[in-house]
Amino acid sequence: MKVRNMVFMALLIAIATLSAHVAAIPVAGAKVFPVQHAVNVVAGVFLGPGQAVMVAFGTALLRNMLGTGTPLAFPGGMIGAYCAGWLYRASGKPWMASVGELVGTGLIGALVSYPVARFILGKPAAALTYVVPFSMSSGAGALLGLGVVLTLRNTEVARGLLGFPRMAHTRHREW
Image 1 (cartoon, helix red, strand yellow):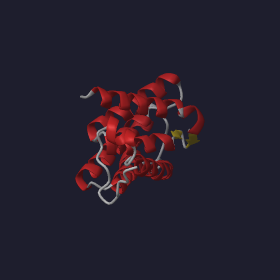
Image 2 (tube, helix red, strand yellow):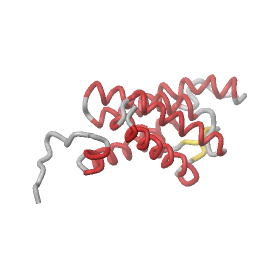
Image 3 (cartoon, one colour):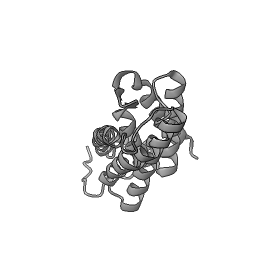
Image 4 (tube, one colour):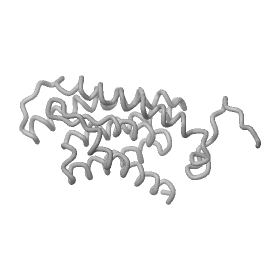
């Protein structure tokens, strides 16, 4: 793994962890967190599915250690990050990373969170309890993340530090 990727991963983990103090919304025993979903989309596009999962895991671990997260952050965030990176890699379209985050966290992650809530946290919940709050949070975060990706794709940071190519349909002006 390249050093620049590790530094970028650490930066994304720091952004997601520190913003948890500001943007977490408690809903149905979970703390919904749109910034994490935006970070998942950014990591999925710029780093790929494997490293996006590492970013989601690192964020969930730190948030739980600091008391700003719950164990539900592990399945929701990690599955969403993987799906975002995988769909982007398969399609090459940034909006597909947002769809991957929404489906991965909002549906699959929410369903996987049910046994975590039931057996680890001891909270009685119906199987579909987390689908609506996770979908709302991941939908908002996925749109935010898509905006960040589309903004960053043509910047010098994305090209120079991350080695990301310029979007094909954008013309480059020489000054």
